[in-house]
Image 1 (cartoon, rainbow, N blue to C red):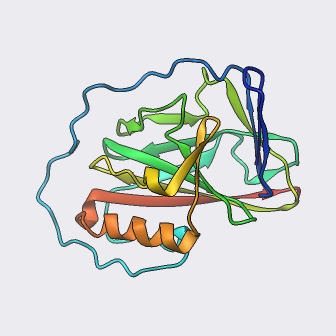
Image 2: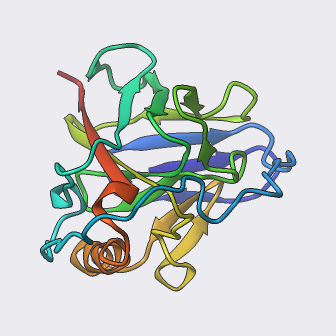
Image 3: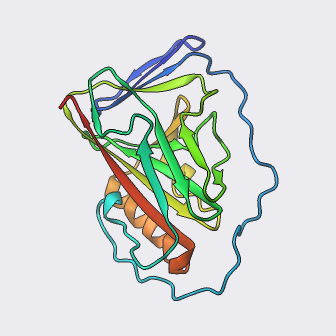
Length: 211
């Protein structure tokens, strides 16, 4: 992932296979939702899932809930050319908070939603959210090399910080995990174990770059 900015004198090159984020106006203000309930949906709690510890984020699964989050691309295809921009779209069937991770072929992991321009990750049921947003001043551009990029979505009825500040750093408008994936996956599982199984959902999407 390479980050370029017209307002800041930096150029960070990370050897991931991945996404070029071009920031055209990094100083743009972002809006936040000031008054969301910590718990956005109230219903009888069911058994807390005994989620197994895994080494990869994509292996964290919840197939026991009717709560769903879905991710796809605006293009409607999983095949992209190197240099092509990609826009992700998410939707849930319940009011919830959504977090989106990009896992590059190099092993670098980025939280791409919420981000600097979309700080409010509260999503209404049935509505679609575009990432980056239509008013955002950056783009995700697939830089290669040829490979598979994976995007993982987590939705929860409680506002859960899936990427802790102590495990990440700011890279332009997004955050990069600074710990190994197995450590981050373990931390996410620990947080999810505190939730009933019907309080969270997950989905993933693979993009084939240069195929």
